[in-house]
Each structure stands twice: as structure tokens, then as C-alpha cells.
Length: 346
Image 1: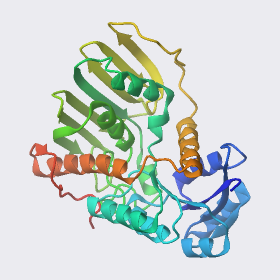
Image 2: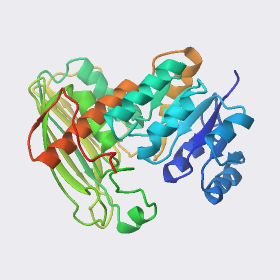
Image 3: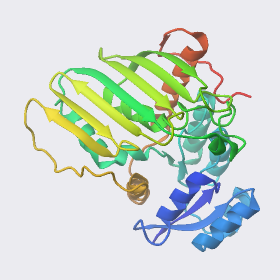
């Protein structure tokens, strides 16, 4: 195999980032080969922009085009349907976050890919931000000592025209609110750094957007290691985005990663000096982490290595589902059972 030929399913807003990264030799060993979307005008525009073939369905794309890997970029509530359909071809599958909106769907996706031998990659590109990589090393090395608190703040601006641009945005069946969509990557990072969650308690509101789900939420978490956590998430920031940050505090040190999407090292302080890295304190260009993520995908496919796969994506979905369960019931929810909530339901 020379280049892995990727086929995109879904030509919405996020597909622009994936297509631009997979085009023009940006990722060694990868190329964009085809796109498909039920909206012909949208898929034709993509095909013309990136000089690739276009189709109106996954079946037609797979029937006529040499595709080595499939990328699912449809609305979140359709991920399960499309991943299961794609799994029939036995090829590697990349699916955007969240991998699904219900744990039942996530389990069906994992089972289908296991049965067909398809490697299932869940897009969690913020794990590949340079500051996040260094933070993870520090956690693994025990440099924080006892972990005390982890906090994420997602203060983004999504005005009504954003939600009105696609009928599925902000709906329970296909999208969810700020927790399931915009803050999902940051919640994944928080759980990844702080470890398993014991319980959650959340409150939310729909402050400014005319949508079914929430645009603002605050969540407290108890981790199994005794640490506490806070999630502050909103798309009601005005007039523009403020931050997408992650803070980890421990008995021996503190780290704050800021920027728009946890991509800028703001604070790196430890009691004991270590082998420190020279950090780039300037925000990295948007799309940088997606490029690093695709390098990971290509490497795993070519070398048959483990990937950021379905079970990892499921863990973060389980946490978000528990938070929604807490919001709906008004109770603290203990992890360890299958939570029930509106997310992914009609």
C-alpha cells in the first residue's frame, strides 16, 4: 500500500478540516480519495474544491472507488448507523466525536467492528496537542503527587445562526448540547488526566440559544482517587470565544493549558525540577491536532498497532451520559451502571 485512500462520509462544517488535512500531501501516507453526502450540492462543492470523486451514498462510494479507510462525519446521532454500515467492508473507520449519543449505540458499533475486523478510531485530536502530551507525561511520571483538582472551562460563542444552519444542531436525537458537542473533547481530557470518576452532579440551562438541549452547564465530579473536578461549559459567551482550558492541580505542582482548544501552555510549575521541555506559548494553528491525529491513524493502520479506539470513546460517552442523568434527575449520580437520559432519544 502506497497511500491510504480515505473516503469521507458527510460534507458538513467539520468535514472541511478533515478534507484540508488529508489533501495536498499534508499527511505522509494519506490522501483524500472521495466524499459522499446525501446533499448533492454540498458534496459536489467538496469534490470540486479538493479534486476528488463524489457520491450520494456510502454504498455507491465503496462500489466504484478504491477506498482504504472510511471517515464518518455525519451528525452525531447518525454515527452508529453509518459506522455499522461501514463496518461491513472490513476497513479502518474514523468517526468524529462523540462516537455515538447512547451507550447502546456505542456498544453496537464496537461489536460490529470487532466482528468485521474493522479498526475503529474515535477522533480525540486534543490528546495530540503538544502541551497535552507533556501534561500526560507529567501525570504518568507522578510529578503531581496526590491529585487535588481538575477543571475544564469551555467558554465559546455559538450564536443562533450557528444552530439554525443545520436542523439537527442542538436537538436531543442528533446532537445534544454543549456537554455532548463542544465540551466533549475537554471532558475526555479531564477524565484521561484525573482517572476514573466516582460520581457526578450537574446543572444546566438553555440561556441564549433557541434549542432543545443546554447551552450552559456546570458539573462537579468526584474521582476515585479522592480528587475533585469542575466542568464549566457554555456556548453563550458573548461576543466571541474566550477559552477552552484544562487545569490540573496536585500537591507537588500545577499546570494550566489554555487557548481556544487546550493548545497553549499557560502555567507549568512543580516543586521539584524535572527534565523540562521548551514549550511554544503561542496558540497553535487550528487544525494542528487533527493533523497529528491523522498521523497516528496512518501509523496504526500501516503498522497494525493499537489505536484510540471505540472503548476509549465509550468511556467519555458514559461520563457525559451520567452527567445528563444527573441534570435530569437533580441527583448526584454514581458511576458504574448504565445511565438513562434524553441524549440520543427522539
